[in-house]
Length: 199
Image (tube, rainbow, N blue to C red):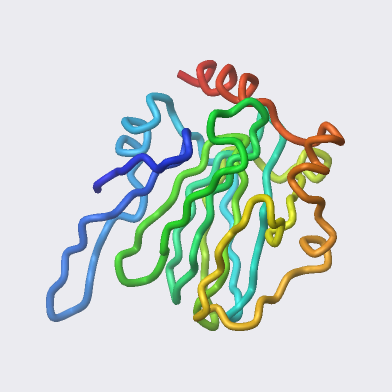
């Protein structure tokens, strides 16, 4: 498995080595020591989630307050999505920045997001199946969202996504500036301190 740090601190891309023959393909979509080696701390899986989305569906930008936050290891097992990592950590050198990675059933890449980072994706195909391994169980009181159409962030959704479909919750989510003004964003210093405590 090959790993690559993304331009957002605390985010990584993982690409598995695939073994193909006349029967099909086999690969390891998750390997704990590959992830631990990149992070320099363990990743404890406490919940697994699956979403199935029609083409054009946008999910996010979602994040959790730290501590403990919710780190995510995300892969697309069918279809294709464009996955976005958004830095919503106040005080981060990359605050407000983002990076995208194509996740699909061909290359079977995965993306890791550290605690405090925002996550979003748009489905590029019908029946896009996304699998998430997460470090903490869902906590409604500590989970928040930022509008994926916030012009300050400026996520670029590709034309092949077609007409965008958002949930009422994501449509009503605040802008990054509004969330910051309301004190609803994680602190970069808190996130780094928590990450160091995991080592």
